[in-house]
Length: 578
Image 1 (cartoon, rainbow, N blue to C red):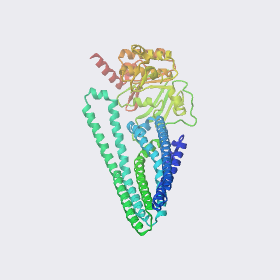
Image 2 (image 1 turned 90 degrees about the horizontal axis):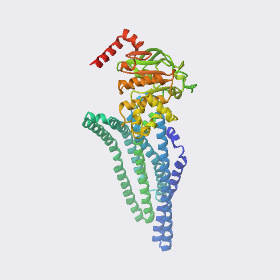
Image 3 (image 1 turned 135 degrees about the vertical axis):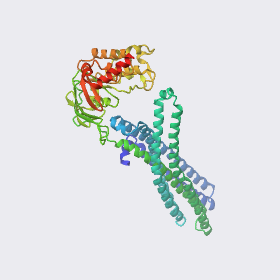
Image 4 (image 1 turned 180 degrees about the vertical axis):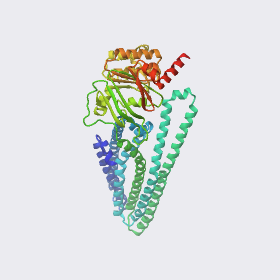
């Protein structure tokens, strides 16, 4: 595990090394201070060597203490810088890994869980790293140094630690073994709480529209209560370590004072040395307490380490091949050859089965089918958002796996069912389709998508700021902006996945007409729609049923020969008539 996380210290190695170095000097000074104090008591006071000796030795002790303080401050500074840098590198790597995930990789982790791993888990690991740099160096060094001094002063009194130290080690080990799985369970409850919050905030308008605030409050309370119970169950074990540590510390000191007083009476030890011995005893026990604190942090962070490691170790199943072509597709020809697909390779049934379909470059293809007929899944295979399970999928005569992912997706522009806009201006959102797009190109795309007029009605026009998810525009406006963004990319293939469902039929017709008149003749257009009116003018229409192609033909051919198409058409015509 340490080897796996070692690269994330890159750029902060100097700070990670300087912090322990200053800690070494700090510990040496702190171990030296009780020795100087003993000199003041035994030689300066008991042997009456005068005020000058006491003042001179006292000044030395103050100087050592100040130097120790300075070393501690520098150690803390460098540890904090290294820890923050480590956390930043780890967070960046984790985010980049998630960006490379395919849809199937993302399906393995919930969004809420990934958010928790990028925030709570990394913060836990980052804090543990800082504490390791400081306490994991300081405590053992202090423990060893102080123990050595106690043995030098009085081997007999040092026997008290032969009992207390092993007892503490055994108890801490047992508590850690029991607490770890409880903390792992607690982090899963964090995921559930984040999921509840995220879902509520994203869907807050629906919650208010259906007056479901009370239900959402109860759902949040349940998740919060479960997290509280899991946290209490985990923390109460570790909380028990502190009273036990304090009891052991004070019990050991009482034993040392009791045995030490006897040694003074017997003349075997001087008062100053006993005083320094008590100081060293306190240093030993404080070192053990610090080790218990870092032990607690490591138990908590171990669960976080494992959750972060799961993401880092996740094998990305859609990657570029060794000889991937970085050139975009030459045209918009698409061919499915005996294609089958299932989301889980171990699943018994395919989502798509025996798909054989050739789409010529420049064709407009409509796809219709009932809910769950895998219309969206079919088109998501084209830009390799998922990979086919069996068979072969070609774009411009070449297997999609032979393109680099960037080249393929730059050739295929897709407007998803869930229209996603980001915080920023309309122009910034549109430039997702092409970061170097000119104002003229942006305006042309918006006119084709029937978005230009409503954009110009806003006071700030193309500089209008959109809230997160485009909350300050309507559903139909959002869809048109997403279509314009896809057009700016100038793809060879454009896929509209039910992307005009929120616009009226006249606007829908205007968009289709503008696409036909303005797109390059070699640009293939695939339209997935629920309304037959949206696809009836397509060159061909594909009817999907239960993940299989039921029929392919023109509107007239399907209306004459295909039962599913007839049912959809007449049901919609009846609805219009009514």
